[in-house]
Image (cartoon, rainbow, N blue to C red; front, side, top):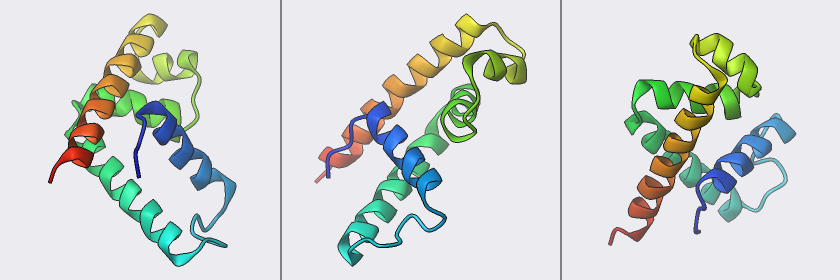
Length: 102
């Protein structure tokens, strides 16, 4: 299943918030694919530098605004935007590399 960086991250995030049991009501193979996607995402998130991982978690998993993320990270809003951009670019590259491995 191809993953498209930020779009995939946002889909996993939305699925997590839409249902207390993300696999509920899905065919077994769809739940297995979602579990595999989450494992891939967790692995590439763990590989990010701490600051990038923090920005991604605060923005997309904790639903903080850029302003609130900047306050939590004690930096400027522009720094948050740049850090998130760099992290998403890195995540996309890493996820693509994982998917194209033999």
